[in-house]
Image (cartoon, rainbow, N blue to C red; front, side):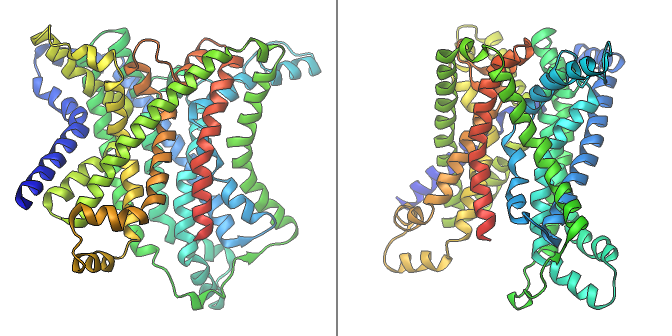
Length: 539
């Protein structure tokens, strides 16, 4: 009986891993179907659009890297190494841009800074000017600014954690040895945070490459926009699969760099003895305190406060509030919440199964399954879409009466499947962090009292994991509600979400109406930010 239950669990793990990796495997398998037609398509793309996709994506990644490293590192060093007025408030306020989807930031700034926007209109009226006052924001440089403002918290969060562990202690030692402040920062503090900065930058670049809303709205030629254009506009599945594979290769390289940097964090962030707590952040006064406060306030101002104010201005302009489709807004919200809730429950259930199996019966199969599932969040939504729809086309061509296409595109099955591929890893990380705080001695005591297997999970682990499971549910719910690329393609007819409607209304230049679902997404996005800030305060 024990053998059969273990065999059943192993089969479930294998099936779960296959379901969550099938889209990626499908994209990789598409290259095995190489023939003269696919080679000619790739050659044609190489002569026409591929150089633009590569050049634009590369330039965007370089600009975003410089932006997030500069903004995230400076703000992390400021709140960790120095003490100045409102430092405690800025520690959590610098996380607020995490609540802003990048495409919402793009809509807000475009509405305010465009030719017909209030800023240029006011400048022309004040100085009697004609024509455009400053360049169009919808370009690669504008997109890089948007991504920097939305994604710098990845670098800030990891760098701040690394610096807070040992930086003050070692900087105090360097001060006693006569090192000036600039040298203490450049030669002591920042080298400690280098692995964290690299990991945060890799995460920001993966989000940049996976984005569709900003690149599509700004009209820039990135890989993700090219995949959608090849599939939906050109109706060329081979080209879409080839572009998806190239994007997947780039993401795998970034993921390897991020994991390598994360592994090095263990060597640079070991905790020191609390007896060394007498080394406190350097107290600043006067102009220096005001300057550091301004450096920390600027990312919050431009990354959260101003976009929210711009969206409120668009929402409240004229009679726009009275003309808003409030009944449809309720339907969009319910659809987003139902999809997010369903996916969150399934994702947390799968994560609990994997984490519990790893705790009770760690073996090679379990480790491989968890490793494969953990990669899902790094896979762009465009790659997942191609990976799900390619086999649908193959099956429909072979068995036209199978109905596979109906079940994956006319119901929420395909959409929830795509969500699970991306977000089970989010739930798994939260559940694993909860298990890390459950002492193994409790398991040994329970076994001595005759409790083992999943009875041990139910009676011992479950009461201790309620908070991590609730946090995992919240994180997956919010991520699903903000997800745009997969939802845009895989949603059934008349199944519109807040993210989809914000994108479509903004694309149609109806930014006043787009402000309502955009602000709703920001409000929902604040929940995990508040949870994260409370967790950091406890530590």
